[in-house]
Length: 377
Ligand SMILES: Nc1ncnc2c1ncn2[C@@H]1O[C@H](COP(=O)(O)OP(=O)(O)OP(=O)(O)O)[C@@H](O)[C@H]1O
Image (cartoon, rainbow, N blue to C red; front, side):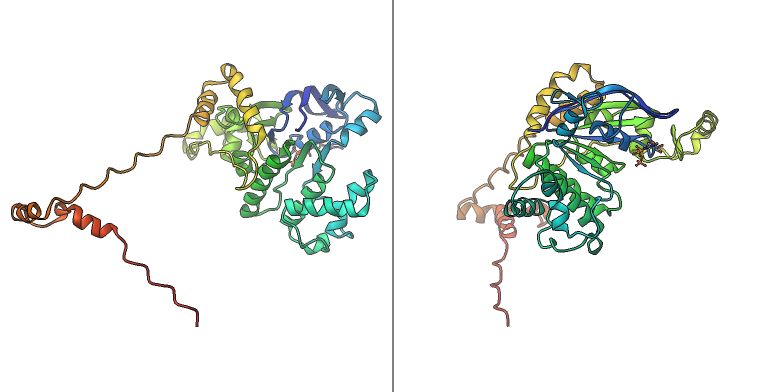
């Protein structure tokens, strides 16, 4: 099972530029979380801080008892082996085949024999649907395949925490939909804790158990997906509806004058689209159920009283038992005996739709016998 990641009071600056401050959240073990936020709000910096590649000046990131900010470098290095990283561009070595790229962490960090490495690499390539492309160079394959290769490489060391930085960047909507399914399928198969940074609203709507958003140097919110998806917080609502009207501007945030002008002219702006929570993706048929689902259910129901009303009702709806299937239609009445039928025919009014008897209805419902398939010429 994946490992819980506890972030407490994390603050990161580069010189005088504060990126975000006092970020506190927990990535629940084995669940999938998404971090949203306009460009430049420090999502990548957040991922790098979790894995200990960047050093925040305050706060802690606790993983299995190790603080990735303040512990000894040796402990941080060891704990980093629990992670799988998928970068925006796949970060593949251009001169190596996909096989060698994916095998790279195994050859670098383990003493496994080549036969064992081959088995693991081929297994991961199968998981991401790349079997047959082992000999290709990154430059010879599509962007979607490069992403999947990056994901396969992130998986070879059996990570318990997977960080994905904009896995959808550069992908068309169809490939993005496949990638969303792949992420859920992976979670079902390996039960790892996952954090995905993305701008993609389809991924955000269908993949995660939990969601958060960074804006204006703060974590606006983090919690069960329903909290963010029903949030009335202006920056969240604007981001989710992809509108220009709201506090998010071209350069991350608007100044007060622009916002005031916008509010004065708000009457002319198109009405925001109503928001609807779509169901979370299920693993593909044949895969195990996600073990995180039951754990999350218990966790979320336990915190229900502390959540806003809209989120509470969305959660209750999602956990409501599925409606019972509609009752089977009553069997058609049996045709009366022949004599009675003949008598009744005399009473019948003019023929029309109302004259639909069990006989005719039955005749209509029975499809004509299907023609037998002809053998091919
Ligand atoms: N090593 C660094 N040194 C100085 N500044 C940095 C460094 N890394 C990132 N930054 C700055 O931190 C800010 C946040 O960058 P980051 O890449 O984390 O944003 P992001 O939210 O991931 O953006 P995007 O969605 O566009 O990828 C930016 O202003 C960036 O210039």
